[in-house]
Length: 460
Image 1 (spheres, one colour):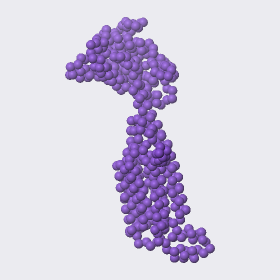
Image 2 (cartoon, helix red, strand yellow; image 1 turned 180 degrees about the vertical axis):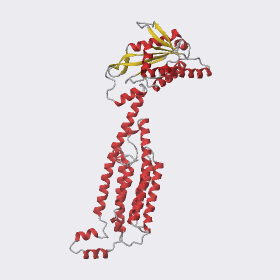
Image 3 (tube, one colour; image 1 turned 120 degrees about the vertical axis):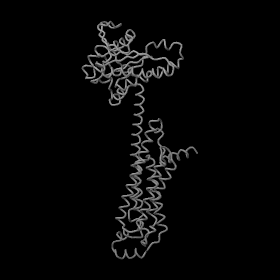
Image 4 (cartoon, helix red, strand yellow; image 1 turned 30 degrees about the vertical axis):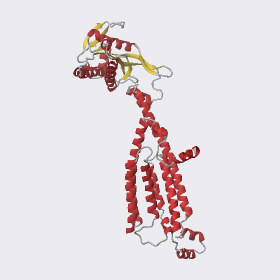
């Protein structure tokens, strides 16, 4: 019993629209499949309507008589059924969709095999097959590649071959031959029996019918294999999107972009001049003492979310979280002509965001959050550290100085402290230096704890 079930399952794989098991393993894949299916169905319906319209015009050219309305009626049914397929289509197993696809092929088959009720033609039924109507099935098959899975495309080929074969065999069985026509043709082509056999109006030419379905199945399988390869490519792209989304949880967008576009972008250890920013919540240890740990974590999440958004908005890289603070760099992994400007603009906007947040907190009866920001511009060493689990590290005196400037905000009771190196770099980067330095006061030869020499600093 189990062997029979397994055989049926393997056989059934070629007759459904169910995606491969790997195709639905994550939300990114599901979204990609759904988008691909929906867009494909819309394209298929449009292509069908255009193709049926052109076919209708072609039929008038080939058969400029009123009885062509029968075939136009068939075309209208096919267009209407295509609209129903679009409405019923979805990713995964859909019996309604399969039924409509089957109905599509059945309408086509009956329209080609059943004698035209509007025609008074008395030709033998076998003559129906002299018009090469089978080629119109290729339109349905081609449209199927726009929307369906590879299995469904092969199923379309299989169903078409089955219906067409059964149809012409039934037509051959029930048809009423006109032997006198065959006799006269044979007499007229005496000495040419092969020619008489080919032109015989009573002949269904079974060899040609078999050739049609064999060629059609070969095309359907070829298209199915191509669809399979396309499907795997779609899955690969969905997997890449998932990996990129996972990377963005840990790296800033510019690092993710660099990682995604290069094979080994961060391995090379090098020296660069970058801007380094530290921000920290002032008095957070005292704030957290005695409070519910969940409340403390929620405050930290709110703080980090707002600050990292500003870092990313100003084209910075979030280097690391530092408990109640964070470190960001501007100019990594690749320096830009406005790194210092971006860092100072980010620091100012961070203060603006904190002010808005404090307004919300006051309205909610919660204590305000106060921060200190330190920014320095200078040389750092950057590159990957680690073996299997890599981390992009930025180290050097510039990092140490920026951290000390952030600590200096307590002494000045200030929001932001910049180094003189930042101000100089702002002037070199453009005309926004005066605007970005608005509100800052200079302090000359200021001793900074942990820094060997006195520094000129700017305080807001």
